[in-house]
Image 1 (spheres, rainbow, N blue to C red):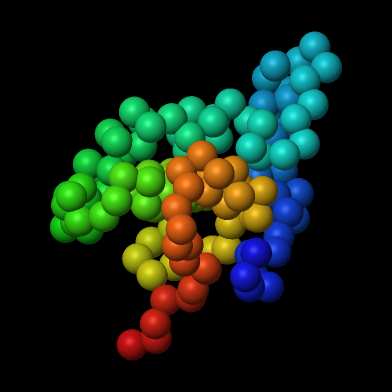
Image 2: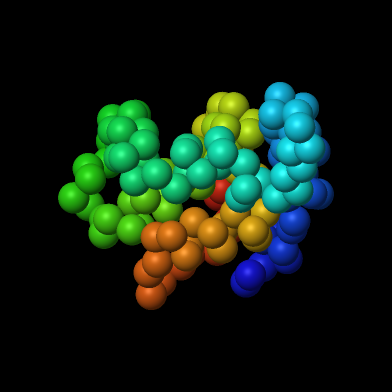
Length: 126
């Protein structure tokens, strides 16, 4: 990862640990996922292209973007990161950003590859 903020494990994020524990308790029978990328909620919300296409329509209307404005994999990554935040933290609010764990970033980038990636940036102060 390019920045210190991005060099984090999902085990360092209390909300993600809680999501994994919730799944393990729900599944029972020895379920023991220890990485958020193994959570079925991550896989369906952040890696399924059809889910991401549908979610993009919500974000693009709200953010006034058009699907044709960016390459498909870039669009999928953009939405996948937002879906991960929504899945774990809910709605953070405008200009409130949090660094995502490197395992999730790498999995999303591997699923929707590109030659160019943007590192985590805090919002500009107005």
